[in-house]
Length: 136
Image (tube, rainbow, N blue to C red):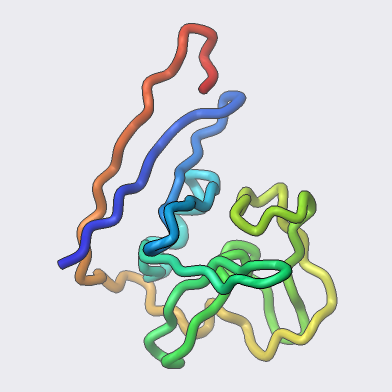
């Protein structure tokens, strides 16, 4: 059984998490509420990335035997839609960095998730200490 280490922290008063990208030594950042939503929708915490001009953070969709962008799940993007990153940083999955625009999406990704699924993994949750000024 693999273990993924999720780091919880605060930035300007908002609760965030860092999710490691499998075997890459980098992390995606998103709001804790969105991470909790993804877990409740049955998304695995083991994320990968496709390198390229604009890398995309991906999760496995067992029902499709394919992968899908985490940003698409967060934003609930549908057919003929795509998600863009306002700051052009695809590891920044904070909802206010994501915007839906017309695109070539083939389906609504959430339609292929299985809410309530428990994945065969363990998550370790680490909480970074809050500094005296209340920020990280």
